[in-house]
Image (cartoon, one colour):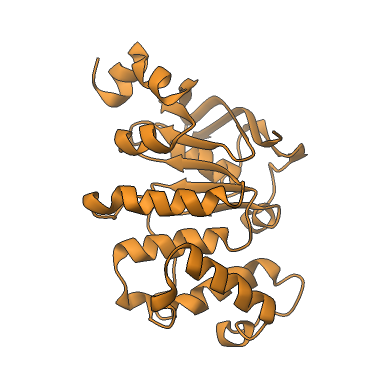
Length: 251
């Protein structure tokens, strides 16, 4: 398997406070890696550095051997590195179909003029890709609904769908089950994981629910005070004394 993402020695300070301190994480094609840790542990800072929203003070980030530190978020996206957000970044005044079309158009605007969602949807390739995501995430019956009319769980699915519509090589999901009803979390993740497995993307997901982590992660990277505390298989990582003391609270 190829190394889709390789971050080495990342450090970042904000106003003298270290949000990342020598962080190293690598992820292979098709691997599902969960990032866990308390709020403020450095997970989101890591995602922001990988996706170009924050530049590390020190360190290297490569994707398939190409250095990406210093690239803008859009440039990073065009290399196939995508993210979804804890709060879905969707357009509530547009339909689901139009949101998905916007996701395609925003990344390909350098190849052709930026079109309105309705005009872009007339492109046969765009139409086919929208249809595929609608089917993959079971959103078809809501196709022409405004986003303002659908549930929070559906918005999360749409947000993930928008992140996958351009066939990412690396996908970062920030708390994918946040806002999803507890009784629906496993069904939601089953749907997401099945959809992503078809794409062979390297997936990193931030999650606080350890039942979700145990079921879906191939590996866990544990963050604590800006550092990687553990990097191992779920059962092995969660059994470590420091992880139990500082993260899961079960020491």
